[in-house]
Image 1 (tube, rainbow, N blue to C red):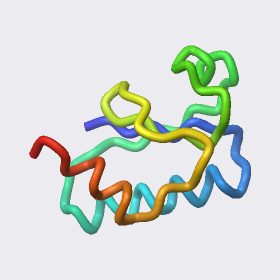
Image 2: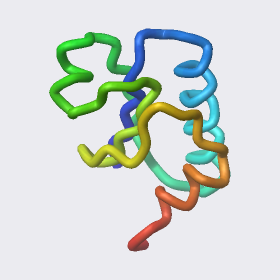
Image 3: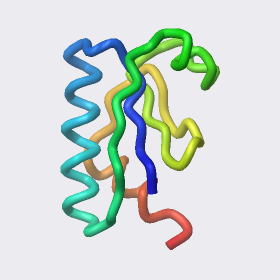
Image 4: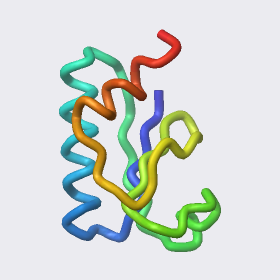
Length: 79
Protein backbone atom coordinates (compact mmCIF):
# COMPACT_ATOMS: atom_id res chain seq x y z
CA UNK A 1 0.00 0.00 0.00
CA UNK A 2 1.30 3.45 -0.90
CA UNK A 3 0.03 6.45 0.99
CA UNK A 4 0.82 9.96 -0.18
CA UNK A 5 0.42 13.17 1.75
CA UNK A 6 -0.04 16.05 -0.68
CA UNK A 7 0.90 19.44 0.66
CA UNK A 8 3.55 22.10 0.83
CA UNK A 9 4.63 21.42 4.41
CA UNK A 10 2.14 23.57 6.28
CA UNK A 11 1.15 22.63 9.87
CA UNK A 12 -2.05 20.92 8.63
CA UNK A 13 -0.01 18.83 6.17
CA UNK A 14 2.33 17.77 8.95
CA UNK A 15 -0.61 16.87 11.20
CA UNK A 16 -2.19 14.76 8.45
CA UNK A 17 1.13 12.95 7.96
CA UNK A 18 1.42 12.29 11.71
CA UNK A 19 -2.17 10.99 11.83
CA UNK A 20 -1.52 8.75 8.81
CA UNK A 21 1.59 7.25 10.38
CA UNK A 22 -0.29 6.59 13.62
CA UNK A 23 -3.23 5.05 11.75
CA UNK A 24 -0.90 2.72 9.85
CA UNK A 25 0.75 1.65 13.08
CA UNK A 26 -2.55 1.11 14.92
CA UNK A 27 -4.09 -0.81 12.01
CA UNK A 28 -1.00 -3.00 11.68
CA UNK A 29 -0.81 -2.35 7.94
CA UNK A 30 2.36 -2.35 5.88
CA UNK A 31 2.49 0.86 3.91
CA UNK A 32 4.92 3.29 2.40
CA UNK A 33 4.28 6.95 3.17
CA UNK A 34 5.43 9.56 0.68
CA UNK A 35 5.22 13.33 0.91
CA UNK A 36 4.39 15.19 -2.30
CA UNK A 37 5.25 18.88 -2.09
CA UNK A 38 5.57 19.78 -5.78
CA UNK A 39 2.53 21.88 -6.69
CA UNK A 40 2.42 20.55 -10.25
CA UNK A 41 2.34 16.96 -9.00
CA UNK A 42 -0.36 17.87 -6.46
CA UNK A 43 -2.44 19.44 -9.24
CA UNK A 44 -1.95 16.28 -11.35
CA UNK A 45 -4.16 14.55 -8.75
CA UNK A 46 -6.85 17.19 -9.28
CA UNK A 47 -6.31 18.51 -5.77
CA UNK A 48 -6.91 22.22 -5.35
CA UNK A 49 -6.81 22.34 -1.53
CA UNK A 50 -4.19 20.77 0.68
CA UNK A 51 -3.57 18.77 2.70
CA UNK A 52 -4.75 15.76 0.74
CA UNK A 53 -4.50 12.04 1.37
CA UNK A 54 -3.93 9.60 -1.48
CA UNK A 55 -4.14 5.84 -0.94
CA UNK A 56 -2.89 3.65 -3.77
CA UNK A 57 -3.23 6.54 -6.24
CA UNK A 58 -6.83 7.36 -5.20
CA UNK A 59 -7.51 10.74 -3.57
CA UNK A 60 -9.58 9.99 -0.48
CA UNK A 61 -9.53 13.44 1.12
CA UNK A 62 -8.47 16.99 0.37
CA UNK A 63 -8.64 20.31 2.16
CA UNK A 64 -8.90 18.88 5.67
CA UNK A 65 -6.98 16.99 8.31
CA UNK A 66 -8.49 13.54 8.78
CA UNK A 67 -8.43 11.99 12.25
CA UNK A 68 -6.50 8.81 12.95
CA UNK A 69 -9.82 6.91 13.05
CA UNK A 70 -10.93 8.35 9.69
CA UNK A 71 -7.65 7.31 8.09
CA UNK A 72 -7.82 3.82 9.60
CA UNK A 73 -11.30 3.47 8.11
CA UNK A 74 -9.94 4.30 4.64
CA UNK A 75 -6.99 1.95 5.11
CA UNK A 76 -9.08 -1.05 6.07
CA UNK A 77 -11.81 -0.68 3.44
CA UNK A 78 -11.92 -3.73 1.23
CA UNK A 79 -9.66 -5.77 3.50
